[in-house]
Length: 509
Image (cartoon, rainbow, N blue to C red; front, side, top):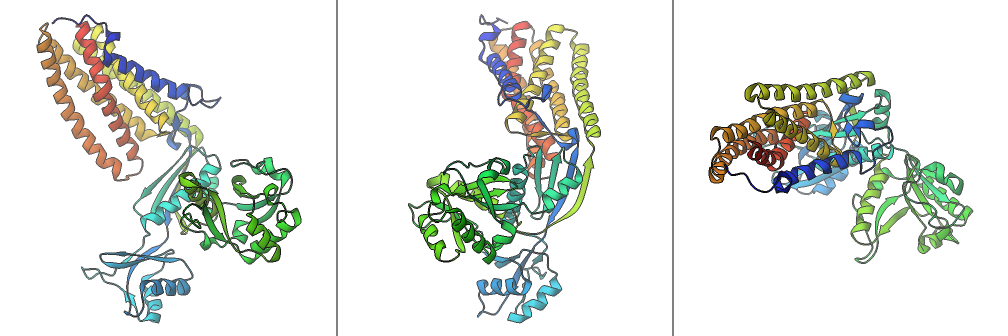
């Protein structure tokens, strides 16, 4: 076999591997700057399996039901009737099977049947004859609940948190480093939404993400969201008056909130000088919105309290995005549906540290063990060392990927890394055997054998990836981490590390 005159560092495959490894190390240890106490962990995040913490299993309470009603009663009238009788929010959407109603609380079939007698209605039947009645909620309601919980968690600065959904009404939350009592308080209790008014300084002094302690001396309390805002009045989507008007989030104040806002605006001069007396909204003591009263509102509020308000967030796509974010903040005090904690558990910090230590040792032992087996097979250091560093580079690439997407490493993820080591060494052995089996030969024959080896590798990797995709998309709890890490490792191997290893073997054998 005629060796290429270009050195290894001149080969694009080897250069690609080296650059990717350097990039992975950069995102783990350099940018963004890791916390001061991160040490060897850098920007890697660990799940509660490895650092301790709590997990909660939540059931989102709600009912999906099909209803048969007289033709004189339309879907909107049915929803309004149920809202009044059940004292909860009811929405509906149309499908090929007819209108499906979402009742945002758990209700028994017997009670609903009794209530429906008031409009001469009944629970609809499915084509198979069963009642169209499910203890569930719509996907959109589930996702809205998840976003609100995520907002509360993010506002508290709890970055090491994952939320997984199972079906339409089950949710699993992992809170690394949080004890079980605190975890239940965070999820089970509504967020504290507060409206304050600027009393000193000038407009612009208050910025988003400032904490209450930073603005407390230049603001005064007006009302808390739970007592001043109608929870069901917050608009689901951003609104604007005209096509070229700013986007905003609409909501309605309760009488107490409207009176409190008017009194505060008059007392602190917001009606005469709204620019320097901004209305500030905080969620869990963090500023989420601050803006002056509009001139029209400042004028009207002198005469009487205002109830229906719209917090404007700006023009264009950015204004629309900010309005959606503010809507979530406004709703964070009240979830769309009640949640029932049906399961919980806690991993003590010392036990998590033991798991982490054991996982690292297991990964290193796996890497050393497969290297030893390869050495016993080939008895050649010039083959074993490239294989070892190829496998090590794959681990670094996976960790770099985890750092980029803020993936939490847990025990299933570590198992996935070990599985990648196992499949990786198999594929490297295939490449090595194909190179060695023909001895020295022409470049054309060498490429033919390498192509044959990669054909086997592609088929093997593809079947594994297809199997792991099924596991990743079926939302099977923490097993998703195992599937995703395995898929990412195989893709790195196929497109980056295997080609580079084949080029190295071509040169040294």
